[in-house]
Image (cartoon, rainbow, N blue to C red):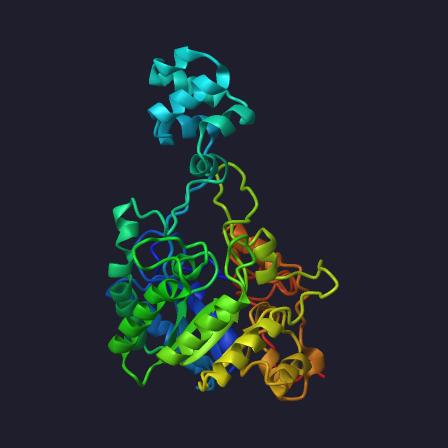
Length: 446
């Protein structure tokens, strides 16, 4: 998840530097910097890499991590593209400003009400009626996308090829990603991770729900076409001596979406193309997300697919731990059997040394990735290395952090954000109620 510490223009801030410095002090093998936008477009306080003006700040971030980790931690940056997602509008605002009223609506309204006067009614009168209409009537008058725009907020899809900028994505995205990757290399990052997961553009091209008719949708070999073209453009730009990884889904967990057989196919194709590692996730889609409140945007981690992406302690009999590992193991097995040795990263509910080590010993993955556990205790790695595992502050998987992300608030962990608030110069959240960084571990507690 993103920590919401960049400027509204996407620049690195002191808070970003402090955040990654604190994680680097724990000396993990690698850190993947949050999803960073490849386009130079407004996206709120999220990092961007869509223009050369961002290189300076990102270079400072790299240097900060190097110093804080004493050179022990490799630093990658995850680069992402996303399409437009609008906030759920007020009902009156939707009908006054956003609905493109047409003859189709008049006919549907006349049929639904058995009143032919709506066929010739003024636009203002039709809009006025719809603003006060019950859901049962709206269901008959509006189409599926219009109902979604009203009840969830308008959201672009990669299949909206009637829109010129969507139709041209295959022509423009390879260069956009390649330029962003080169900036990452110039900034000093050890590698880039192409974000092909969850609810965003590249994952949507991979999805079985992608029905584009231009050779970039439908069959698997067409759906993987643009992701491979993006990779090849990136590789050509950054060179063969630079790490390029990919994060993609083992299962979309939505109706009509990809399942493990799709992911196995993609994993082999990505390894064949030359990706340096494959990082596996699960779910996190818009299609099954819960309805947002008016004025808020739909959040892709609120439905069942969101649960599978970030499972909580309130769970089924399987629980939240290592929930994705069987899927990861299937992808790794297929990649290896095809003759490729690209390392495969397992993540999702991995919290203890014993758990991570067992995954590696069973050859279910090559690398164990932590997110929420690292947030709970950035010193996990040092504590385990020094034989102080009993001191690890273990994540309780309540998704307190995820709720802050959903609310677009600075992300912290409930296990430490109220501790020692009276420390001198402790940085606090904008509301002054939480500390922004976990207390420093001196490495001497018993």
